[in-house]
Length: 95
Image (cartoon, rainbow, N blue to C red):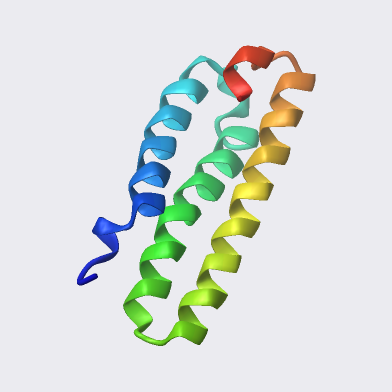
């Protein structure tokens, strides 16, 4: 494989970025620099780390950055749970 752009996981993570950015538009304005900022950073980190790991060229680095991306995905999941608990997100949108 010659590019990270051919990885299905990278493609799906880009789709997730678009969905999340669309979803946080309805959050209260006072959350722009709080929860919304955290959510955006976490979701952007997922495809970014996948790409960086792929670009490093070694299996060891790739694996390490995939683990970092996984950590960002778990962070995002937690932020979505918080969003639901605060009433910013309905259950159907989190899955």
